[in-house]
Length: 201
Image (cartoon, rainbow, N blue to C red; front, side, top):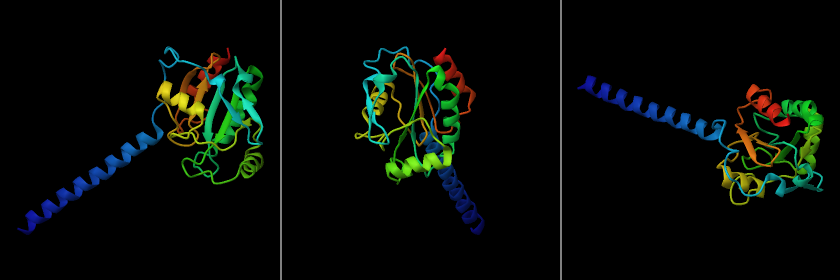
């Protein structure tokens, strides 16, 4: 009787642990996702990324039409995130490829509750800690019904949206989404760098 009870309890404990690990695994997949590697540019997409405009972190107009014909690396950022150190690599990409036409744009967002600061605080944080010189926008929503129009356009046409901070989107010279990369993809990742080099050539 006692042995039977012990076996039953152990069985239920194993089931409970299995469910817990399965939930964690699915959560990680949902948050970080995988890099989409092909098929994006082959679709017939209306409009382009150059149709949209931001407000810079200083409150000035930042129309993407001024970058027409240039590839754009667009990402959502946050100052209190475990991936915030990626600013260093993104600044390096900017420095390495700016003279070859690549435009880097960071979009601060508090959608994941890790960007509590004002635009002034964000700009100072990026300047002091990472010496950022690429474009930064005002804080924007990047997911949901109130997302900035360019993120709505990406989601509606490519079924792609930020799943966490530092989700990266590469726009090609035609203003279409070429590829996107999860937060787990470091700025130094060969698959990101190779795609950039393909676009600027």
